[in-house]
Each structure stands twice: as C-alpha cells, then as structure tokens.
Length: 382
Image 1: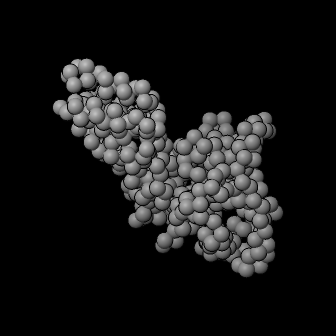
Image 2: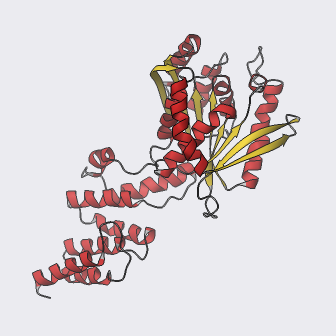
C-alpha cells in the first residue's frame, strides 16, 4: 500500500503545485474553535473573472485532499471534467468527534451535529462569499466521514448534488435512509460508493448489502455507480475510486468519444447537430456551467454528417460554429459544405472565398479553402 501511495503522490503532487493552493484558518462559531482548511483554485481562476466553478468539499482533508485535488486538476486539464474549487477540511485528531451520532436515533449529535452545521451553514456560505462558486457541489468522505456525508442527502433540499462514499462505515439505518432519499429525490443527484476485495470485512459486507438495495433504484434523476476493486485494501481503494467517481459524475461533460460517435452519431435516426446542442444544454442545466462547444465535438459531428451524407444537418451546425468560434473558418466551412451539397455550388464557391483572412482552425486554412473554391469553379466553369 505504501508503494501505491508513493506512486499516487508522485503523480499528483506536481499537478497540485501548478494549481493555486491556499491554507486558511477558519474561526467557527458553531464549533467554538478554529479549523484548518485547504483550498485549491483552478489554474486560470484569476484570469477567468466571469467564470463560476463547482465546489468539491473533502472531509479528512489532512490525507484525502491531495489525491482529490490532484485528480480534479488532471481531469479538468484534459476537459474530462469541469474546473472546480476543491476544499479540504483537516480532521486529524477530531474526526471521531466530528462524525459522532446518537446511539438512539443514529443522527448527528453533540460535536457531530455542530460539525454538520459548520459545513452547511458556515463553510459553504464563506466559500460562496469569497469565491466564484457554482451551485453544483460534491462532498467526499472515507469510512466514518463517508457515512457522515450522507446525512446531507437526508435533508429536504440537499445542498450537495454529488456524494462520494469511499468505504463508508455505515450507521444503523443509513442504507435504508439513503435508498429512500434517492428514490424520492426530485432533482438530479449522483451517488458513488466503493469498496475493495481486501477492505475491512465488516465494512465490505455492509457496503455490498447496501449496493444490493441501491441497484433497485427506479429514480431516473439519480446517477449511481458502485465499485468493488480487486486486491484493493481499505486505503488503496481510494486511488482507484476517486477517478471512477469523477468519470461517473461528469460522463456527459466529457468530449464525444469513439463509442458515442459509432453508437449514436452514425445512427440515421439521430440528428447529430441536435445531439450536440442538447449535450451542451444539459451540461449547463446539470452543472451550472456554460461550456464552449469543443472543437473535438464539432469535428465528431462533422465526420458523422459526411459519413451519413445527411447534409441538412450542416444548417444548424454552421450556426453553432459561428457562435462558438467567431472569426475562424469553422462556421464558414460548414456553411459552404451545406450550400455545396444542397444544390448551390456558386454560393458555396463564394463562401469558400470569403474565408480568406479568417483565422485558421483545425485542418482549415486559406490554401485549403481557396482550393475548394477553385475546384467548384473548375467543375462548373464559373
């Protein structure tokens, strides 16, 4: 396990060092004491002054913050997840009191109730006040703290939309409560849970039983994923679970994959341009992020149109391209292809010619566009 931890840190620490890490002391009225927190801001936070970011709250921040922060930075770098503000709460020496619950009703009590209010009423409010946060919030915990994060899900209007349970040490009735809450949820939620073949036996048995309940979820608003990692211990499973959780919660955010292209875009019953528009509309709706359509996704739809010869699809695509990449040849090329394939070669020729002076993008440059215009001119004798 030590080797795995060292390898994980060797990979992630350089990534974390590139991002902005802040260490703050938080004086809590609810707790009556000062808590140490770590905050990782996205790489370009200072430059993108109008952009708002989802928030990831990490309990056990003294050891869990760096793996989560590093992987969030890694996935966002490759645009497989949005840039996010990651906040770690150090709990070294306090986690047992922080996660305390009553032996009678199994709900947070004493210091546990105060810690619950500290996060929900103080910490998140301060983050919203001091940073450009979006409404999409995730919370992460491990064993005792993983159980604790689920109490937020039981509230009438949960403040978190994503819950990452790393080998949760479940309180009595927690499995039933969470199952009921997810089934009744009227808004989108993501619930992730992981164990490993070499996890603590009692924890693993309860987790697998809990998964059996959650497999029966019938609520389409809930995204649920469970992992039981082979040869993973209570601690080493963390390195495998965090990337899996990120991937499951941000599946639609990722660029169009080869699988999406083959199984969706090439189907004649699917409108590729409508699929693209809906993908980005859903991203904004789910995560509160207005994401620019990636060049990768434009190219995927372009290839699908060329493959299926569904030329009418270009009409909406070139409008989106003009909006997303103004001043470039992208929208111009798609519009010219539309006119060329729908019986207007002379107009297509002129549109190709109009690309001269626009910015190059992808495989499109002035020589290519003028060659397309000259080919039409030669074929039709214009």
